[in-house]
Image 1 (spheres, rainbow, N blue to C red):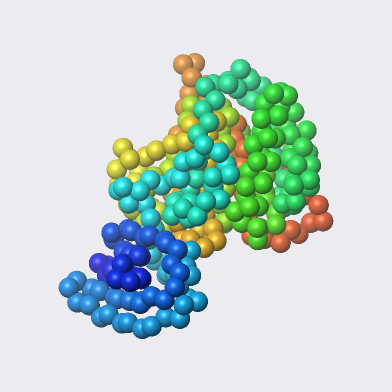
Image 2: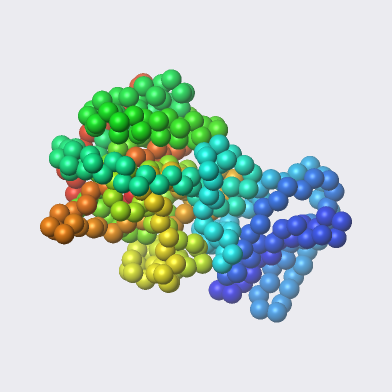
Length: 321
């Protein structure tokens, strides 16, 4: 259980990469030229180094192509001095190489209760989930799919315009980050009593998510604070997080990209959940209006986007938000 995998790449005597388990540390670098590769497997104080000369073509690394067994999901870059999220001022920054080291990406954009005036409209909506499945990633087709979704939602014009802008922006940045993903699932959800606040990782490429109403957005935590045995074996949700004071959250209005387990090139997936249910002074649930743009690496099964309308749902249906 205390075995440590160490991988180092030395360039002119400088160690460039170190990966460890139970120290939960990984660094990705760009290396060009000839270098000496060293791979060691250590248990306790015992070491078994193996050295070999690597051809230059194998050392033009941007991401370490490590394929680790499923029992090591917590190997990543979230350490005590490394935040879970890469925070930027604009979405275009998400294409920088350093974002590969993070479990998620965030653009801070506090709305300061901008849309709370429409809370009554949201609470009275006749739908709980609206989704466009397999919306084409092509910009024109994607925007038409979003328009179809919003026409069905019948939200106030200013709020609908904001959602349209955010959805199209997420579609564009997803296409730049993951060009191999050719379609997206776009969802509008009203989360209230149907919220399931269980800690989890998404088992697809990833999700872009924005909360428009409510008190807080999606909650997340760094890997070193996660009990992965409890997470993977459906353990007690209260025992998954080792220290509840380490839980962080996106703000209402922030644009959050959650990396899933199938995000290309890296093995970081954000551990996250929906915020707990909140009620007003009269005991009424505080519903959250949420946009989700999911990158799912599947081939569309229909000739054009499929609009799915779901009226009041059972609690389990909204478990992964």
